[in-house]
Image 1 (cartoon, rainbow, N blue to C red):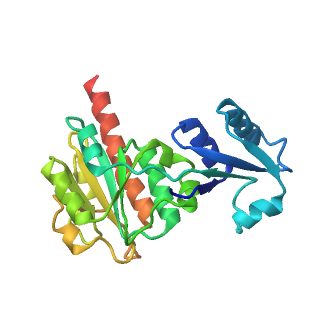
Image 2: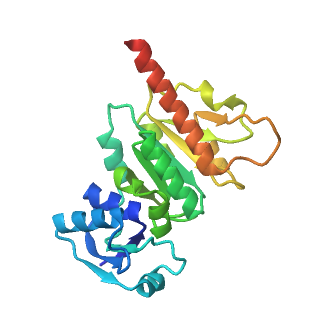
Length: 253
């Protein structure tokens, strides 16, 4: 049996409670946080769902999350349930869907921020490699502000095999690479299933994945400074898609 994991921070705990798709063991609340509005909401949601919560001293919370980022609340929950790739493909067959693939992104804060942007931008799933990258952990949960509860998280052993599987099922593959010739806004994202590959900031996307891409795009910059933070770059591309969809709907009226 898998051990419980923890999530911490008021927003992350509230989002997990409201999503209703996570199994809670217990919620620990700082004994000094009685009058906090969000803590009161956590208590109400816990009571409504029959989830046990208890008040503990701040030292107990600091032992669990030593860096003090818990904001007075820590929840012990079952690990996130990963979605099977084939189930995801089948669920979105015949629809216009999107997924983001992270290749070698090893910073938990970046992964959490990307997941948050994905949910805000209406992306249907995010694919994480079981090795050479970050899986869902408490920092990812906290940084995503609970967004991981609103998107399919797919864990795979081989990104190359995964991309090939998507292409076999009529998904287009888009790779972000700062050496590309084409700009990110030159792609029409509105009428195709697509997988957007984002690579680690320094290593970039592996050559084997770049070879499989149907489009290789870049974000143009006015200086020769280092590439953008990967979470910022992902957000820029994803919200270009949003802009195109909104424009398309507006023109169609």
